[in-house]
Image (cartoon, rainbow, N blue to C red; front, side, top):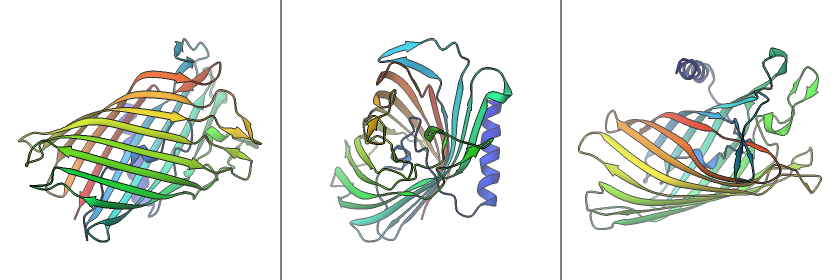
Length: 308
């Protein structure tokens, strides 16, 4: 817990010092679109959100079998994510997601085996269309979105004069296209219990190093509950499919695969406008490409949002 609070303090200071931060966990099993808030802003409304994500990437898999790692390798990604959404009309809204990323990898117990990088990276801009919204009479709503993944940061950082590998770079260095969809069904006029489903896809381009991160699709389905107190809970199953990365048009070994996670979320409303949110991603099943591949073991997110 101490290391988590140190991370929160570090990124809080960073947010205070920097006016604009933009990056992505563009690799290492951290899909950027999964970090966006669901739904879309109403006409004239603004939604601002900031969150800290911590990914521990220490599980070693051979296909769907977890393997004991004897190299004492430790891999961590910490991200500060900033999201802004605005309702343009009753049906149309725009959302953008920016972030700052800190990578760290250590193999063995020697400090000389530590690799690290931080900086601005990719961002996402989405245009959303919402023909139906939840109301006292209407109990079904959905939104559709399309947008761009923008290479806003570096992908050529070095350490000790050596170029860092793609999975350690803050950005992908390549433009991409994104598709997004969200639907929700309320079981009562008050909307205290809801079922929801979401989908997003990323079509990634090739960067100047002739490296292309694999195209990926993410889908989640779950239930949300609102109590008489200012606390809401949700739980979802999340499926991710990622194609293998490519370099010089050839498949990169030990990249891509399938992931199935359980995602619980707790949200506490401080006021009508402000809310705190905590979520986690718990691994249920993996089926990964290649002989051996490291993947996420723990994912935690703590965030705050305001709507006005």
